[in-house]
Length: 209
Image (cartoon, rainbow, N blue to C red; front, side, top):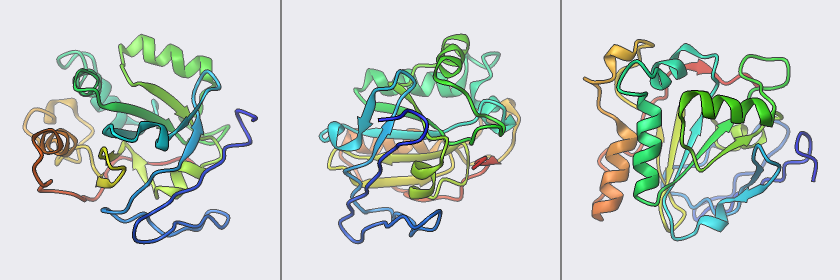
């Protein structure tokens, strides 16, 4: 399988099936099952969501050049909000996957080696960084911004999608007073409780398809 040009994707949903036709597709509804999505990571290994059945998964769309992404990776603020979220998730056995859908030649595009270097430089701790330069995964999930966050529970149901938090500013100083929707969703899953806010409007830079 070619790392750059041959990413195979399929989504099986309980309520409907998302069908890719060029770049047009139906949005995957919150509450639908997403159990068979394959994409390649920075080392060339394939990750399929079906491999993580029984675990909670977080998908984080990212672009290191975006100021809204920089806001959450700013290490001057308690070591970085996104890094801390990733580490806390890992401690709870949550699989955190960062996804880069920037096309070649556009802001945020990186090679596997460059993505790995960024992870190291920022002290980030995702389970893997997934490369989606032709945008199939991004279009399948209707990822619009960086960051754009998705939480999938152990039954492979999409239980949250939208913004990372409630303050659509690019300033790191606003993080402390914001409601973090991803943290709330993960805490509710851990406690076996319904998720109070399951969908919000994402904010950030447009994904550079």
